[in-house]
Each structure stands twice: as C-alpha cells, then as structure tokens.
Amino acid sequence: SLYKEVEQTYYNPHHYHQVTGGMYFRFPYGAYGKASSYHHMNSIKELSQELYQDNCIQFVFWDIDTVDWLKDMTSQNVFENVLAYLRGGTAYRHKKVSLNGKKKFVKQQFTIKNPIGGGVILMHDIHQKSIIATQKILEFIKNNHSFEIISLPEIQEFSFNLNTFCNFYAKSK
Image (cartoon, rainbow, N blue to C red; front, side, top):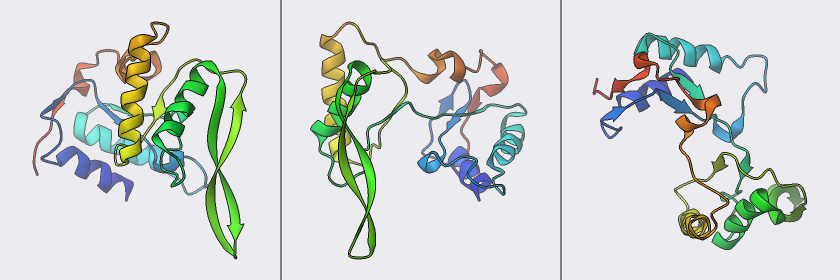
C-alpha cells in the first residue's frame, strides 16, 4: 500500500540524517485521482499525522516532463526538452502506438511555440542519459544568467512555511 511505502521511506536507515521542512511525495506516473477508489491523499495525511503530528507531506507534480524514461531518448533529447520548455523550440514527447498487436511508446518530435519559461523538471536519476543531460542543463544555466535553479521549499506552493513540526530525524524501526 502507499501508506506502507511512504512509511518505509521514512524509516529507511539510508534516508537523510535530518530533513527539515517536511517530506515531498511524487505520485508514480503522476497518476493521481484517476479512479474513484483513489484515496492516497487520505493515506498520506494519516501517515503525516502519525510521523509528524501535523500535515507535513507535500505532493509534488512537474511542469516539464523530460521523457527521459523513454528508450529512444538520448541525453541530448532530454537536454533539448528542458530548453524547449524554457525558451521554445524542438521538444519530444511519448506517443503510444500498436506494433504487431503490442502497445509501445515511441518518441514524437513537436515544437513548443509558447514556452512556460521554468517550472519543476521531472528527471529520473537511474538513467545515465539523465545524468549527462543534467550536466548539460547545469552548464547551460551557469552560462545563461536568465535562468536559476531553486529548491522546492523556495517555491511558495511547496513551502512548509517554516513549520517546526515538519522537522524530523530519520530513525530506524
């Protein structure tokens, strides 16, 4: 269950020694509220009350999907996706196709004409191409002073507003 997974993360001995400001949670695949039986928000709230005695688990969604999980994507494609959402241009998304009766995701190129100019970027650190793309993104931002990288707590909608109840030390069960 979701409750169990978040609880295991909290008690994981490899977890940060101290986390201030609460915990962030991203729904796998962004799948939130797709079914009437979906009660994850209540599970998260209950777990937060148990661990922190307050509502200290924030849901995090993304504005920029790099599609780095797609097999056909290269580190350059992932980098280009971020740039396209920042300033416009060529980007890539996934498209579901049927080949020989099997469903498959393929890379589809498109153009972003009205970029959002920033936001939360979704990347998966388990892919080497994402690590390489991150290096390219950091280099680009370092040389381009019109963009900056900030942490989630610096974004108002993800801030815990210095709620001291949301500070905790990871501990083993």
